[in-house]
Structures are given as structure tokens and as C-alpha cells.
Image (cartoon, rainbow, N blue to C red; front, side):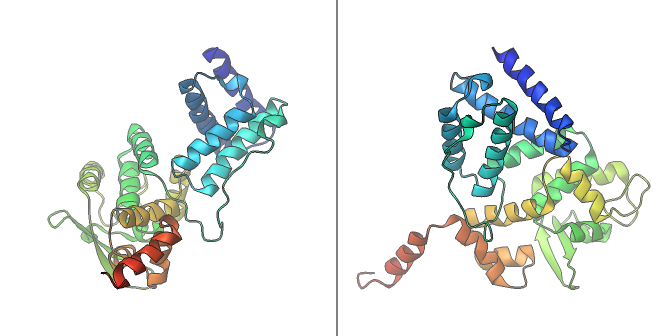
Length: 279
């Protein structure tokens, strides 16, 4: 039965090609369907036999894992297209999905998602791309800042990177041990002259080149930056610390990360605990 599910996925991907979907879209659909297939098999079900109940349970599972409404909606879109291919649109009728405020929604990677991404990037065995993804995820710098990095901005002795932003301001960001490991491995192998990240022709990488590379891993730099900030907040870092590390000129920008994970009742409880007559 497992073989027939895999065959169905392959046939579905071929159908998507004929529908004119881009290779990136097809790759994303394959990735999400494989995850759904594994979840079904863990629950003694097969992809070819799914019904509305299985879809609803999977959506609830994603929500309980902390996936954002935007992410859950994207996954549901994949399943809905798959149902259309199967000529069984009823599979996705009346599915309940939690709605978020898309305007304020910050899309981030969970720790599990980060591990999956980093594992996939490491398997590519491209020293430069590995170092770039670690740099973006572990420092939260913007693509423009990454492309502007010079060798003189990296200090392996103090384990810090000196970042110049678009306004001409500089900020110092400590480097994680993993980042140091992959960055030093890349720089040792390539031995760039001035710019840290260079093309095959030894020219400074462009923002477009970095964005194109990231697309291969179904990620973008903004999401990695959001993840950096969110994980710091989740680990108890203060808004001021995160704001300075991220180079936010307005701390209200940083506050969005606190709001995105903290229920409104927590703010109420904090005030009551602090200012109650009994405290």
C-alpha cells in the first residue's frame, strides 16, 4: 500500500507540471505531501485513502505544534490541490482552521523546522551556502547586511561579527559556536580576499543570488530573521537586547515578537501580580 501512495504522489507532481506550476511550487507540494503521508502512516492510514476526518485531524495536529495560521493555510492549500487532482474535493469541505490576523502575523520556523532546514543545507555539501544559512539564522542579519560583510568584519578571536546596516550604523553580534565552525570552514576553503561571501567568479554576492539560493531550500531571509528574533524572545531575552541585536530602529517593531506568542491574559496577569495589594 505504501508503494501505491508514493506512486500517487509522483503522478500528482506530473499533473502539477502539466498545470504549469513552477519547479519550486512542485517541490514544496512534494515536501508537504511527504510530511502528511508520514503522519498518516504513523496513524495507520495511507494517503490514497484519506477522507475529511483525516485532513481535519492533521490540521489540528499542525495547530497544536504551534504552526502559524499562514503556514497551516499553506499546507491545507496543498492538500486541497491534491484532493482536486484525486477528483475528490469533498475531502477538504468544511475543514476548520484557526484564523490569524495576517497583517500582524509573523511567520517563523519552529526548532524542529530549523533542524530540518539546517540538516538539508548541510547535506548539500556547499560550504558557502551552509555558512550563509547559519549566518542568517544565528545572527538575524538582513540579506543586504550579509552581502556587505567584509573579512575585517569577522573576528574569530572575540567570536563576533561587526554589521553595517543600510543607515550606516554598526552593531556587534556574538557568533554561535556552530556558525563559527561552518564560517571558518568556508573561509578556509575559499579564502576570499575582501568580501566574505563571493560568487564562483570571486565577486561579492548579490542579494538576488542569496535569495535565489535560499529558494532552493523553500525559505527566505525574512523568515530566518523573524525566527532569530522569535527564538530569542522565547528564551527570555529582553526586548531591548533583541532590538539591539536585530538592529531595529524602533522597539515597537521588536514588540511584535512578544505579542505573537504571548496570550493577552498573560499581560493582564503580569500587571495583577506586580501591582496587586498582596504583592
